[in-house]
Image 1 (cartoon, rainbow, N blue to C red):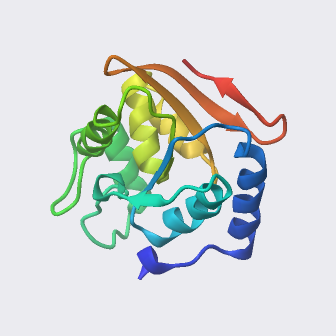
Image 2: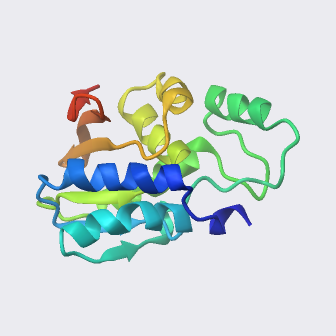
Image 3: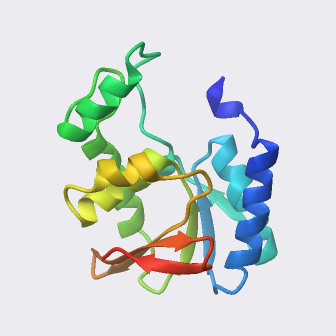
Length: 172
């Protein structure tokens, strides 16, 4: 099953690069989708900070209806209509709401890292900057890092990690 796949050797190298790059940040907690690749990506970073990884079901990737012969068409339709989904799948809007409920539940002083998934993070980008979620999703690489800063229940800053410069590029 796809959800049980381990990281590839390239994924393991990317994770180690993240450990080195994110060592300087004072995280107070680590959370992850319970799916293996998300856990395997964030665990070495959490270990480096001496903190456990807390798995949370709210952080799973978008639920899909089943195997789709026209996956690209389905994805395009979902990004054009954020409420579109086929049962028992989930719309981009539903993923957005699930992830926002997780973020709203964090203490205001929390500085957390989350092992997540591309569609889910892109749905948050769409919530923060309407109209760019699909573009963000289509350009998102593996082991990508997105920083989201919340204040009073609102996303006030959004930035993406630039591996070459080892800095965050501000989007919002």
